[in-house]
Image (cartoon, rainbow, N blue to C red; front, side, top):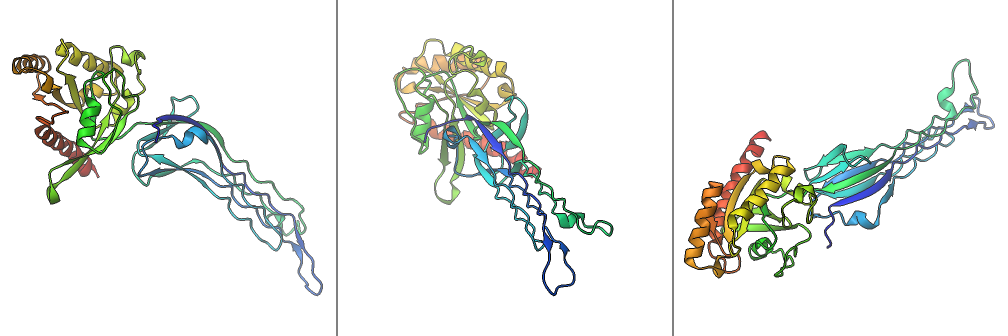
Length: 341
């Protein structure tokens, strides 16, 4: 399924049904008079957060959504039925913005969450509603109230436990493919990954196995926060990650500069990205000499002031200890959420 993380849609709730101007007049029945019922309420436009979706591709080809108009009132004091609602199924992490694409209206972060985007119009009154002691035969019946019409932007920010960040060709897609069932495109040239990918990492065996979700964020380059390369579009996905795994390509000449470049972009983008917990790993060590590995590991450790994991995503050398470290970090980040709940 093609990945799409932004879409513009147009929604309209249903108009209210019209009231009925009716009169009862039957032979041998003493009490007649007005008996027109009220119109029914128009249908709502509802957004629902559902499981099993991680793209907005459904809203690429269908962009207009209209709820049903309320049913009209009828004689014999019958009220019209409510119009059918229309439900937009959205993946977890979808934000709903107003037409200006800046005003946040709703943030869909929990499975099962439902919000009314546009309320249906109220039904009009029938003439029975206007019957009084002095107005015995009213002929007034109101039309239904119009529904709401909105242009909205949907913007998806993937929610994952761990976000994979690094320069292009740092080995992020390879790491994701060897540790999950995800199958991203992998090639030996920059910007192979054009769309974020999700995978579930399983740590341990049997009943003790634990899982966390990992997101492969397309490569960042210098100036990404200003629109260079793939721009800021995918930096937004990093906002929803609990923590980061920063992969550095060990085969390049200056690993320190590569590390600093990504850190600068995270800090310049804002959104507290630079403050997220980060685990640093030197990748592609299967193509390096032991001396080169140690020199670059030490240089990264001095610059970052963090423990540098030495791994190879291809040969899986050093990967299992790294996954256990990531699992510990994820569980630590999940703990405050459970306590708040």
